[in-house]
Length: 150
Image (cartoon, rainbow, N blue to C red; front, side):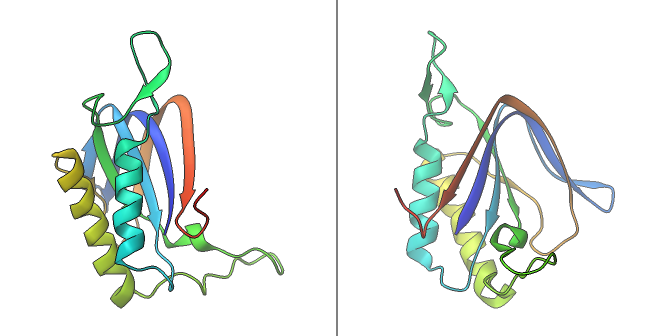
């Protein structure tokens, strides 16, 4: 699984003009699921993001997690995170998981985040055409790939 995590002052996702999810300060998480991903990837990624210390403490040092900062979470599925641009100019999405594989892992990821943080996670809709808006805070943007754990 691959995630782009953005610290935001606010973020939202609309589908056909209707708000699907909206948060104030917290994390916007764009998540892509590939064919090789498993429940272990979903569990590890949720735990890593929930505990990631990217919010400022009283001294202005990025030392607090979204939990400690009482932040909110918005998760948006994004298969394009696994685009390959190695050949030509048209991205290839062959590594992106089909819905039958991806949807259960996406839902598990959301449930894991809710369990760890004790908060309801706002979401987009898997597979829908979505408009995502955000006001970056910092900006702080982190990319995590479960196939490249450092």
